[in-house]
Image (tube, rainbow over all chains, first blue to last red; front, side, top):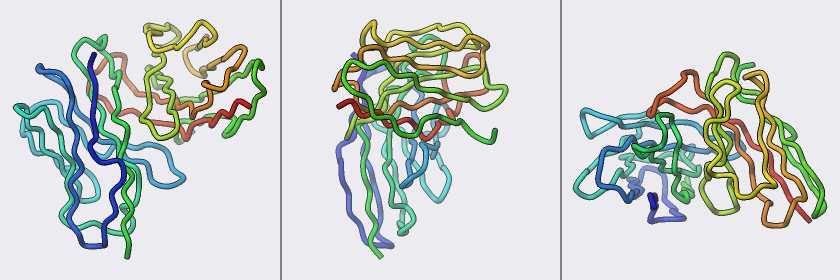
Length: 116
Length: 116
């Protein structure tokens, strides 16, 4: 069955540290990839997405992600985190036989805490 | 409205009680999804509507779960004879178009269901 794995469940960083959150999926074909973020007390919102073209995708708030097909990975990065990046981050994948609509399979999420 | 609205925000039910959870998608959005998010996990797909048609209910965990969207706008997720394992946050999401595998989903804040 298709699955999405996020390696780190909890990450604690100091402000200005660099961030990389891992995401792997279990399918060798073409997929659409997403990162969603949930800030404390808020709803899930889209951070960035990849479906074709340049494998390095830039999103909002200085985040970027790199699709590496050979590694089945879509890791999220930010060079310098801020306290306001404290949130839960979810990787999600739309596999090709999902029915032609955006049915997402989510990873378990990574809770990021950034200390001033 | 400006976003996806869900009600109630919190629901406490006694085991065996029936519950109904409401979702108001963004006006004009054709696609509507329900997800279930257990504590410490990512959202899991329950069901998908395209207008009033329920095209995918493969994620509904049992026949106690029922969803409808009779006029193609507001949707209700009903859980009959609730069990403790039904305790979770139920998320609703909508998107604008009829079929796209990379479209942005707009999520509501969810209904947190606790079954005692």
